[in-house]
Image (tube, rainbow, N blue to C red; front, side, top):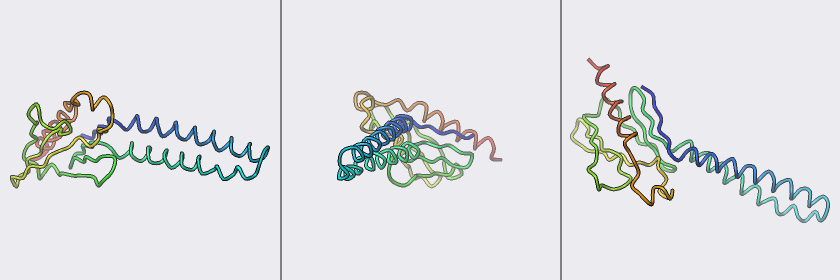
Length: 157
């Protein structure tokens, strides 16, 4: 079972492409103005460079933020920070949080050692207006985690 859940990645990729188009247009405008009017206008090339840096950041963030379920483990990571991993063999049970819990808490993983690891919905943007106005729906991620664990248990003797 391989599955990847990305909620904000498509938005981030779209914004990245918008920034690339704006940078190319700004670059062309600065070059034309420098040729036709004043060579000192080349100093304004910093604007398109900054736009391209912004585009790279959006592409990078959009590709990172995810919940990924593989046959051996599940990985969740946000726009920044290191990825978090839990191997299915170390997992005892996936716990669904009670209603009214923190909005970004998607689930909890109870390990065989007895420790409980909270699975934060890092793949959701905390600044997305839809996530600010109402509690996000984590049912897709919860179902994927439970199905992944059940698939691992079915393969294990």
